[in-house]
Image (cartoon, rainbow, N blue to C red; front, side, top):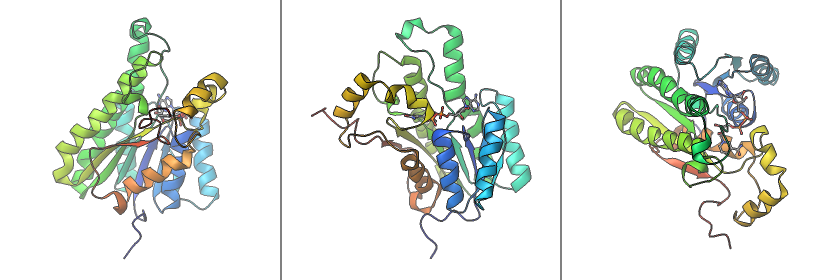
Amino acid sequence: MTSLFDLKGQVALVTGAASGLGLAIADALAQHGAQVVLADIDAAKCEGAAQELQARGLQASALPFDVSDQAQCEAAVDQVLARFGRLDTLVSNAGIEGPVGPMRTGSARDWNRVLGINLLAAVWLTSRAIPAMAKAGGGSVILVASIAALRGTKALGPYGVSKAGLVQLARSLAVEWGPDRVRVNAICPGLVKTPFAEQLIADAKFMEKRMAATPLRRPGLPEEIAGVAVMLAGRAGGFLTGQALVVDGGTVISDGS
Ligand SMILES: NC(=O)c1ccc[n+]([C@@H]2O[C@H](COP(=O)([O-])OP(=O)(O)OC[C@H]3O[C@@H](n4cnc5c(N)ncnc54)[C@H](O)[C@@H]3O)[C@@H](O)[C@H]2O)c1
């Protein structure tokens, strides 16, 4: 019997893969045997990341594109299918923070940008990828959301709305495509050490409060999110669909004591 986490023979597309969680997820999927396509808007970093994985003997290639553009999302999925003949795992991970401050202060441009990159990209990518997965016998879609999808905030309102949208997208797509053996789940990370979270981690006042409310008393590591993605991509996650998996050191379940 093959390992529950064996991804040999799989093809995976990971967005936002030049940095942070996307890079860690791409790396972990490749380490478990997948052929990984790294996508990012930063072409140079994306190529560099793919080359680094290749240098370690992993199967990786770069496919730079902007996830906020529907046509580019569709073309990227088509390119993966044309080149590798299959797509088993899609990780929609690229994301931005969006405007900081009260909800009403975000401009229309801010809202369009944060919803375009964080939420609509997942709609365009899944719309193209899932029918192909279904036709080939199944697949796994992983949407990287956030614990900001689950709690109200004064600081990052539009970001939270975009991430809550992803959690609901996972539920609805899971219902729509479950009979075709396509599983769709969201991961909701808490604070994880990546360039995205650097500013927060450097803020001593914020960290004191957040860590007091986090039973594990530390931020997460990118590989601790990547491990969950490997599970969702593999046989280990075979009966999981429509879920929002909270990976946050306990922040959301704690009463702060
Ligand atoms: N780090 C955290 O604490 C944390 C917590 C919860 C959720 N998340 C989510 O995890 C995901 C990854 O975050 P991260 O911490 O690795 O951030 P990061 O900033 O290190 O990486 C994000 C990557 O996405 C890419 N990207 C941005 N806009 C893009 C676009 N339009 N098209 C293609 N690529 C684009 C960036 O170039 C970058 O490489 C995001 O969706 C973020 O919201 C992060």
